[in-house]
Amino acid sequence: MQIHSNPIPQIKICGLTNAEQALGCVAAGADAIGLVFYEKSPRNVTEEQARAICDALPEKVPGVGVFVNESFEFIMGKVKTCGLKAAQLHGQEGPEMVARLRESGLIVIKGLYVNKAPLLKEADDFDASGFLVECGKGKLPGGNAMTWNWGEVRGFGEDHPMILAGGLAPDNIAQAIDASQPDAVDISSGVESSPGQKDLDKVRAFMDGVLQSNLRREPRRIF
Image 1: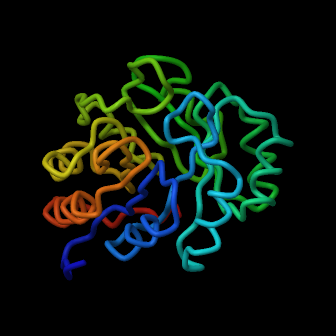
Image 2 (image 1 turned 30 degrees about the horizontal axis):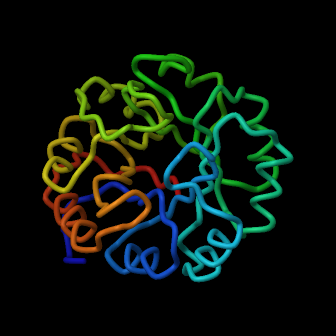
């Protein structure tokens, strides 16, 4: 990863399914690796896959479990079995769930949306480590590879630790960062050759795009 004199957001690559590609993402500059525990997702991982990835990651790079409306017991079971250090909640989980997970020592990311509940205006109800913000269109939780007006959430990031997601790709990431001014960015399908299979050339191109962005403040560290 080339040296950059200006601040850049942290980078989470999500939807990994094998350790070799996860390490390739880390070598390219990823700050966190996302592992999806949602059966309807084409990137859903088994405990064995997740454990292998988390075991391979450097200490400073957390494995982030992505969950949708699961129980506290289910999430903590995956945390302990797989070695996760963070939980990302993509459903209708309430403030109590966020608080319990944080009390258990986890980094906790809560998903909020522009066009559906839970909405951005609900952020102050949650004591989350950070908020992953998306447009909220499409069939599945997550960005569904849809681009949107990232500038809509610029003001949100001034007051809350914000992770930008949804429709990001190597050829638009600099524009998205310039428009939204996030603390971190999250990408999955935009750097894939097929669902769950990362194209490391695309990952490196994405990192180059991040380096070309113009973040006008020092970002908060979320991971």
